[in-house]
Image 1 (cartoon, rainbow, N blue to C red):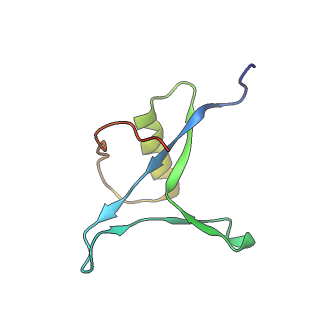
Image 2 (cartoon, one colour):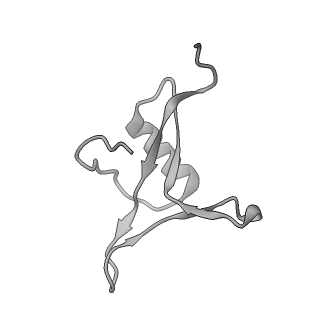
Length: 79
């Protein structure tokens, strides 16, 4: 089967964590609020000509505005 479109058949997910008084706090975004919505990590597709780390930085910039340097979780995550 031929793959079409601007994005590869994989996506990146970005975990933004900070220390909180009761433990770590995580940034999530509300998707599809007009349909009652659901909470989700920042995520998005990887374009054919970009590396996953570049896609992660782009998605973080598109969906939020925090200033932070990306850090690897230490390997690939699969689920």
